[in-house]
Amino acid sequence: MPDMDEEMRALARQTLDKLDAMSDADFEAQQFQFTDE
Image (cartoon, rainbow, N blue to C red; front, side):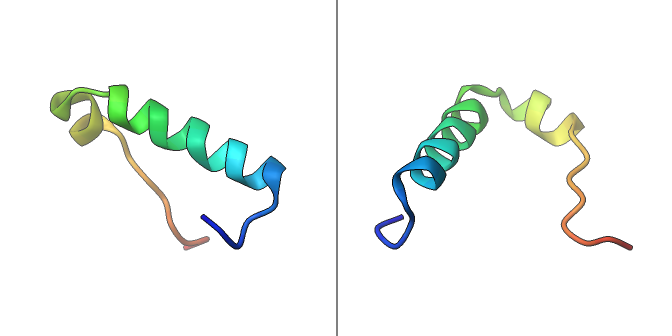
């Protein structure tokens, strides 16, 4: 994250904190779309 500006770093940290707080079952139940397909 050192190449990110402060706003993007805060957003990345918030996202990582949310993922870290999820249980394995919650994570597995999510559907992540990484492309527009």
